[in-house]
Image (cartoon, rainbow, N blue to C red; front, side):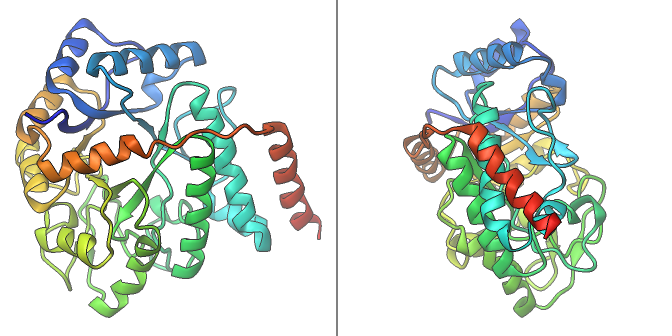
Length: 334
């Protein structure tokens, strides 16, 4: 039996119920993910993180979406209120790489202060004119080279603060013209154009964890990337990503069919872990049973993630904040 179940799961509220504790002890998810429904105060979030880790008996990664802008689960006063990434990058101008490093180094400090040690970032989808509004201002730029450089700065900032990166959305969400929370995007670009979209993921293929895109790339396969053995194989072989791959939220409407079928298809395609976010215990039972234990290859990657846990460096956050303010204000006043 694997040490880990092949899941990363949410929970319902501010503290765990007895039923949730028993369930998590039984299915042994590799990690957990928090949302706004799980956040009230710093002490409460720390206590919840302690409860989650106690259920599985090890220092499980606890994920959050803390991109900034509208995708930001920790809000003031627990965390800095950031502008959306694309607007921030544009405001920083030539100082964008350093500014993004500082932004996510500060973010990492704020996450670690409440017990959260993994952020679902960097998002290295390459934006284009047609990118759906749900994603566009969450992107870092319009060229693969720019996005890769800024994505590296994000990952470095978080690692220096002790926070894992989750690279998303592999192999690229930027051409999607619909919201995958609601519909299944289909991208009809030729394969040679897709290679440019995939380039930032290749440049960051050393990151510990990645998250799939629920998108059909018609030039590659007629199944969504998450459930496509062909696309998943390309992620491993051509992009060269050997980190732990989780699905995007398995309950998103881009995917169809029962949750159990989605989970089984994703594992069969080559995903290591099923991500289920909404905290519904009945749904989690269904997903965990279908996902089962990690495969041997997935367990190897999971153990590698734990062994590569970043260690926070001592830093003067006030000084970093002042430097960032000077960078951005200097750009605005220049």
